[in-house]
Image 1: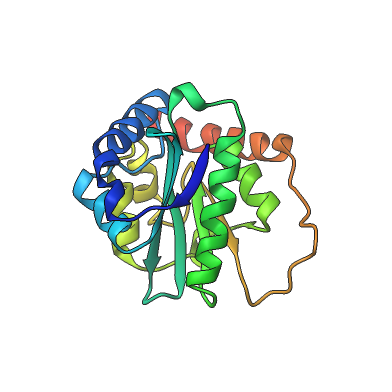
Image 2 (image 1 turned 60 degrees about the horizontal axis):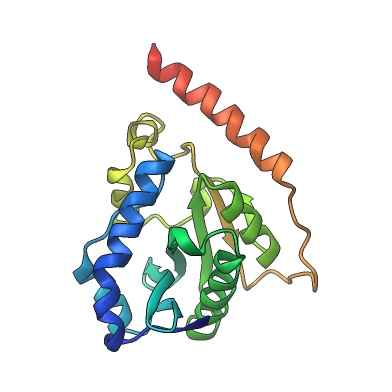
Length: 205
């Protein structure tokens, strides 16, 4: 398995990446912003993506987005093809794209919003901490990307202050511990349960 910085030669994988993201979003019922092949290719051409390949076979992908004039960076669209799941590949891709983000955008804050417990734990291991949405980018283009999520109405009802997703942030200006304290899955599960109870209950009213 090879995990590398994607470039324009990997544009042949753009369609399968989009299809895999779409299928994952349908299975989860929340969360992943759908993208078109042209968008994925643009990330590859700028060196803002990481791809995992098993020989010539697509295995996984993640890309970098910049917001608020480069003050914020997001590692988005983390996806692993179904036949390669359960092997720790998502963790390796996440580490690779995180390190690439820190190298390419050393002064930017790296953030994430996700409902996935596995992604939350990965973020925690890398040094991210849970934050309110007010601490994330104010760039409306980013939040517009949430429109394809089935829970977008929750974001609208709260005036973009919170949703079922949890916001997480890595701030390079804050001294990080050599070994970041991981937040347990139990904590994230409880947080997710509280949000679902609060917002989905209100939605039914």
